[in-house]
Image (cartoon, rainbow, N blue to C red):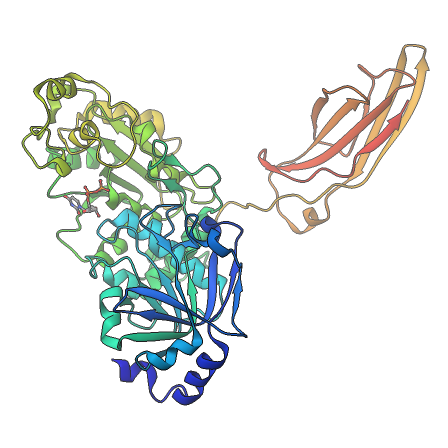
Length: 553
Ligand code: UDP
């Protein structure tokens, strides 16, 4: 392996000389350890010490140069989970001269992305914490291309979803465990350390109860582009391809006729739907659609994605498998089922995903509210919701509670007890929430995404004023359409005008369909008004305000 890595592709002697002379160079982005990604020349890793090493010399570079603040608490987060103290990255410093006394370094010629996977055993974590962040970190740095090498430093084995990580690049990812096979000292010619957090939408509740991230920066567009490329790399032909607006060739008509169907994502070991057959029959009858089941235990991940990518609805108990909703076609619905005493409002990783702007998915949750329909497992190990290890009183309290109180991650026994219940789904109450929650009948949308283009500024805003009488004045405001409107098909174009009397701290807002308006109510003579105008597309796409107008009556 070390041969593959270091021979033939770089001039060993030149690399060694460069390292000895120049040492390590580091330049980072980000002001804080939580938003930092660093690029290195000649970052080394000593497998004996299990430490990264920065060799300093007269020409080494370390930006930011934080001094001891590098340890407060760390240089950067190695995983996409923010500020988690098991995921910190740092390095040791050594003078480049120390190389003389060290084992001969093995050089890694590939451009390398060094990161931690957060929880590679859990599908939600795999996609949300690792695959999406790694995918978009690679988009951020052009030399992290198809040939890039990924190195996972969290120390876990491959895990059940390693094939998905393999899709990120053409090169086999390396695990921390494997690094020692390359020798005692390995040096990455070019590497990036850390992951972009730009695509994450959920925080798991380490410092405050879990919920959507405060400032979500990703839209459905980026999630869908990622999904599309992952599907291509899994050799899946998605609905995107069959949904092309066509001129109606026979083949396309055939695909148009393709039947709508429902998918039930089944879990086979924990958090079961106890009456799955009954549920499937009921859904088939209610929606007059075929119902397919998938489960991670029974088929390949790629075949599951193939099925989901053409589904109109996806039903599943709350759980990591629901992250596969990101492969649903636009217009589909996600229906998430929650066990007894678990409040769907407080556990929303999949609701948040489905609701990202531009995901174009509907989302409905159902909660078992009939205690007689739940099956608890008090005798299981604590991590599968067992509670027999707790004091009798605490066990009793948990067993009579009707709602898990808000809690932090990850070992709250009441939460685990409730979330690992099996459920007999009450069909009438489920159909009821579907009736209420589904705004339109879910179906695979043939058309493209709804436009998310925002208006530009309105142009040439002007005001004219006149005084009618000592207590009567008029203010006429006019403007031109935003420059980008003439290139767009927009369903509804409106303008918002704010009028504020100078010196007052409130303003009057108006929504108007036309390009000018004369205001006379509440307009006083000999007064200065500040006027802002902006354009709004389709009720919610707000443009910027034009420069404020000063209008004196
Ligand atoms: N899992 C599964 N079938 C089961 C139970 C779990 O495929 O019956 C998968 C699940 O999708 C996740 C992993 O095993 O990827 C861990 O499941 P767990 O219940 O611990 O986590 P959760 O689904 O609540 O996130």
